[in-house]
Image (tube, rainbow, N blue to C red):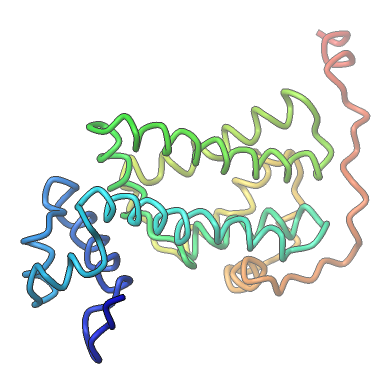
Length: 229
């Protein structure tokens, strides 16, 4: 086996450099020569870690999952059984951009337009994230299509922020969070956190609610709504 030279370019350095190129210039420019130039190394340093460019692409896709989807799972799993905490933790990764780079997501979506392999992986990741939201809404007390559609609308709502390139101060987004939660979760529970800073702290796992979670009042059902129409 070849021994790595002391101070030589590491594999993660190559991946990080490729990530920057992908976000800045698109997949068409993620090639050995421009990557080596950006990293100020020889192409031989690149081939020390990757036999071919496709191997780098595979590593880049894994890196995207590790940096932009795995943190969502860790956040929700670490939030405990309270769906309010889970919801805040999920949005904390998104809104506070903790271990999440929206530019990386957009670059992968652009890449998927020219690669069926990436398109399949993107679809799988989108479904995985929606499934995670689906679980949160189940913990809120929704079932079947009620949980599914809330999960989808929540996810599409966030993608819309990125697709439309909404320019909004983070403080404003935090102040609006309770109103989004009203619509998405069907309850005004988030208004208990009065300030943007309290909501930020909640997204960081430091929220304290006066009462334990006992579920929503489900007395107003679809059947009763139909009966009153």
